[in-house]
Image 1 (cartoon, helix red, strand yellow):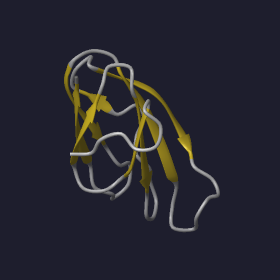
Image 2: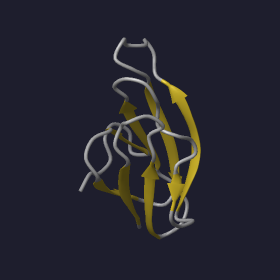
Image 3: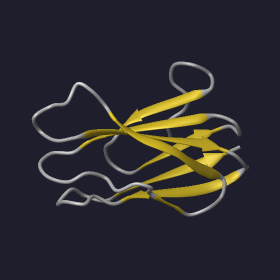
Image 4: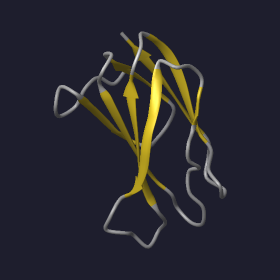
Length: 102
């Protein structure tokens, strides 16, 4: 389980295997994904419940030759659990993260 990193209001994590994150209502979440080869993670990702809302996605600079780096931002808005599913437009794997909001 990942908890807040950095400021009290922001949880940040790099893309990787599926994980569970724990947030408080009002906290923001930033997830960064590095694609290798063609394609990127589609926006907006699928979110299974209204406990978490999608804020935006941005490219992270500087660019690297391997592929795009994207930062997805979310906000915890209500107690509950949400599964966020990121689909890759190329051959990258889909990623599912579970967010527990307290």
